Amino acid sequence: MATKGPRPMSLGQALTGISGILVTPFDSHDAIAPARLEPIVARCAAAGVDALTVNGNTSEFYGLTFAEAERMQAEVPAIVAGRATVVAGIGRSVNEAVRLAARAKADGADAVMIHQPPDPFVSPRGIADYIRRVGDAAGLPIVLYLRNAAIGDAAITAMTTIPGVVAVKWASTDLMTLARAIRAAPQVQFVCGLAEPWAPPMTALGAQGFTSGLINVAPERSVAILAALRAADFTRANALIAEIGAFEALRAEEQNGANVSVVKAALALSGNDVGAARPPAAWPIAAESLARLRTLLASW
Image (tube, rainbow, N blue to C red; front, side):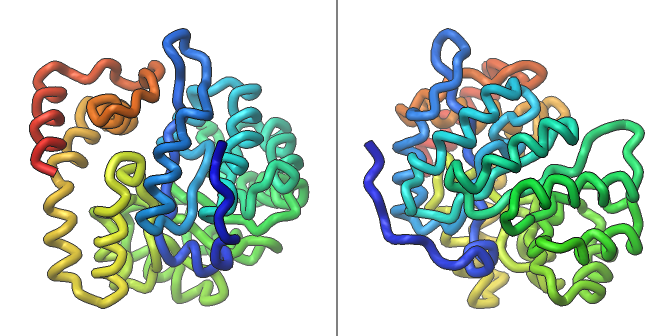
């Protein structure tokens, strides 16, 4: 049973910090096992992670059935139990996204994060319609998860004016477009959506906070990086990021297909088995990579 904590800070304050993306635990029969998140959430809360996201990419959102995504959204807020702000990842077909969004508030989410649709024939105008329909159903603050900046400046700015949109998690390496987007939408909070390694340059441009999958394994390292960035100590922030460089390099293997796999392997090596990563992720990780991971964790 989770221990109820104090109600977290406001959503705006939380998003200037760390947006941790929780893994989805599976049991030995490949069934979701939400309760296995409890020690992960407890470590994040103790370290000071500000927000926790269920059904994000580190959660293997697109590897879950719709029923599994519903259950994770329903059960994770109770596990968090007020110890952090809860953000519910919303996506898939527009009708499924609306169904998830419609129950997010009752499930205990504080905000919804709308995945940018991966449809091969997506249009900027269609994304805006998608956001409106999902946002209307949710009745909660909206965080946009933007991975493709090629939709253009005008489309990005238009999306930030949709009612309910309070933040953009910027997951594109196009920093010049990010700079223009920040200038064009001062009413919206921009967050580094590419985790710790990209947080310094995005912070320098005006973004605040960053997403993190590392928090599942070593939340205190993410919190230390955030503290350095908030102090504008980029030298220290970069030094701390260098210390996690080998971990992030392992996650980037197999065309980034080891991203979640390495996190889950690290958890298993640390005594917190959350099961396998589902195809099309790379599982198990390569033997040589596992050996490097074991050595790295021992050094930590």
